[in-house]
Length: 276
Image (tube, rainbow, N blue to C red; front, side):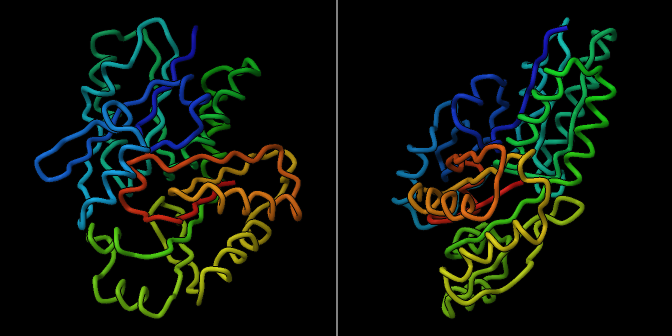
């Protein structure tokens, strides 16, 4: 059967890859204004809009109906959702799957909890496409991709904590103290897909190179892997990171992409997130 990949819009990948999948949009709320991520609000428009406000916009997961509208009969449907520890997107996708299969019981639908976000979700999609191109059956794809998800590493460094503070995901006093002392938190996902602080680093430059050190610390078999770099409005910084990585590691391919509105809501300008 033909392949139909559905992902929520917290997935970050260059446009040439996003064109190959169907996106269930997150909802972004600016007080009285409501937008659908990447539908009527592009990353560029979001960045511009965010500069004009002093608060963090709210976000909501795609509804079961959003996913349901994208599932196709006579296709192998794979849904890729942001970590269930961060959003209700995965649970809503499972509801959509159950609703669809009640009506079309002979179809195939599988939902992956990626335990990830941003370009981490994106790399999972690229791996899914790669596995299907090897003509693997669906059960083998599920098992192989499940192992890939467990082994995937994601880390990020924020230049400041304002958006996380405003969104309530970081204690206000702690966040302001971190900003004041120029402490950068090197953060990443834990085994359950929640956000974990790995290290506190003084200064942007040290944090930048420590992030590269983490590739060596947690990675292996680089020549057979992608490195994904997602940035918030700092392409030159991401490009420099790519060049520094290439001096030390031989990845199969390094992909640079901008953070979409959903992820950027909780990050801030000059943020870098990597997955490998």
